[in-house]
Amino acid sequence: MEAISSAILGLALAWAAARRLPHRLPARSLVLPTGVAGGLFGAFITHTALDFGNLFVILIGAAVVSAASLSLLVRPAGRLRRHSATA
Image (cartoon, rainbow, N blue to C red; front, side, top):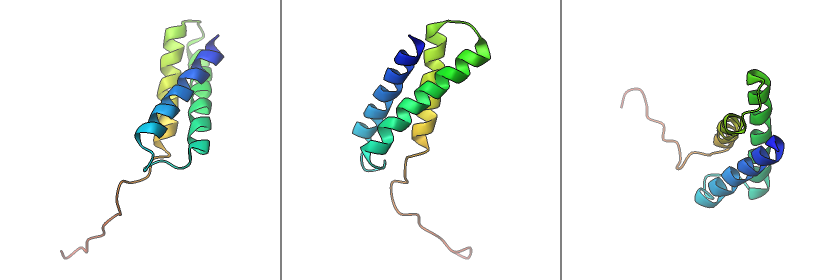
């Protein structure tokens, strides 16, 4: 139950991110599996660290790790502007 719930949560977060920020994320075929993998890994870490079966806490851990892994895929909005040290 924990694994399925965390995978669905990670997929939902990835779908929302891909729908909201399509110009700042890579292809959807990379974003969706990253969200699912982050959700599963977050559930695993939370379950291992806390060692009890509170589904709500495990889903929070899954959401946090999924959001963190998705944030690594976000590209900058515009070009980076370099200013000289004398300007």
